[in-house]
Image (cartoon, rainbow, N blue to C red; front, side, top):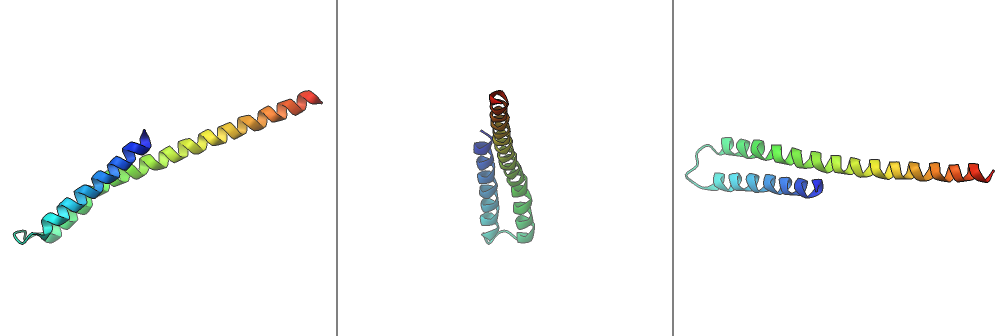
Length: 84
């Protein structure tokens, strides 16, 4: 779920950036530098949120794998103790 929402946020970031830059290319726009700055600023928030969600999702998966491996080792050690 986090991964899907993160990808969606990154897509929104790309769409915002592209829309504002395309708008800046029209001849009637005089403040091109301001529009480019606005494109970068407006697209950074969803991009950062998406990347943070992906990172936290990967950390959650790594924690689950580590916990499963730790549980597996302790069960194996318990079986060895019982055999002795």
